[in-house]
Structures are given as C-alpha cells and as structure tokens.
View (cartoon, rainbow, N blue to C red):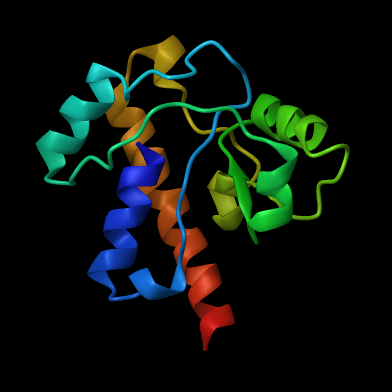
Length: 139
C-alpha cells in the first residue's frame, strides 16, 4: 500500500524523476505474492493506482543502493538492521517523520488488524511527512 501511495504522491507533485520507489519485506512469508486484496480494495476506493508488485525480501544490496529505507513498525526496523548487516544509518520508522502524536508510533498492520482504513490513514500522514522532509533536501 505504501509503495503505491508514495508513487502516486510523488507523481502528483511532478517529482517522479527524483525518486526510485520500491518495497521489500523483512520476512519471507509473502515472497512472490501480489498485494493483499484489502490493499487493492482500499487503493481502488481512494482512486490511487496499484503499482504492479510482487513481494521480495530486503537485501544488503538495498541498504547500499537506496538513500532511505523506511519501516512501518519496530519489528520491521530491527529486521531491516539485521538484513543490512547491523547498519542502520539509512533506516527510519515512517511515523518518526510526523511531529507530535505520531512520533515513534507503529503503522497499524492490516495483516493483524484487518483494518485497511486505519493503515491508509497512518500511511497518508507518514508518507506526507516523509515527502515534506525529502522535498526540503531537494531544494
């Protein structure tokens, strides 16, 4: 969901030439799977195109290649640092970009909650704050 939403936000601002956006799992359970039907339904409901995607696991090469690696929750952050060989300077929790109430909170995981609306709301706030942070670097 986050990859599709962020791709859409970046395109809406005409910044697609400044970003390379991808998503990767920190576990192996969903490798090769397409997005969950709840994600597809929520994105369709809000008019955001689904980015073609099949789940893959994050690698150490991802850490070397990308400027930012964004995790959704504390478990993701720990797993990402492990997959990056203990390096964590480029790893951030999404809602840490949100000042105030969102700071430090995990994004609601619809795999467990089955609440795709709550996840969408968390992502909308977090991705907006992250984009604002990165736009300042682009100026």
